[in-house]
Image (cartoon, rainbow, N blue to C red):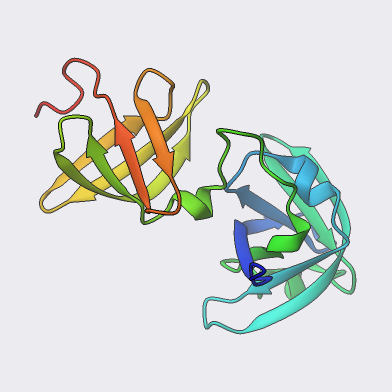
Length: 173
């Protein structure tokens, strides 16, 4: 059975730039190549409505990608889109390499130690200079799990579970 061509959130519009309708994007992947390779994006507003736009331009600017959308030519139009999520169809995303995963596929996975201790589920992911960090919440606790080979023992998307080998002191209060 083929995987449905679902919308995947790849970033969020966090502001405008200049007066000609450019939008400042917080990318959830840090990878501009994917956005640069597509012709259309779908924006999901805070109210849950969807709007498709043709991508006019995308370029890094001050550490954040700046995007231009066809038909969006002034700041007043752009301001209405701040807070919208930027989505792509799953079919627009490139295939991942072995041991590479899209953040959307990891969100909600349960995280268990090699000793069988259930830590919780991945609720957020953020980038650092060297690796991603998985935010895992379970009960009253929150754990920050580095996505490095020494810690991540196994990722099983089918069983929706990640097996981790905690570094010394990583799970201490």
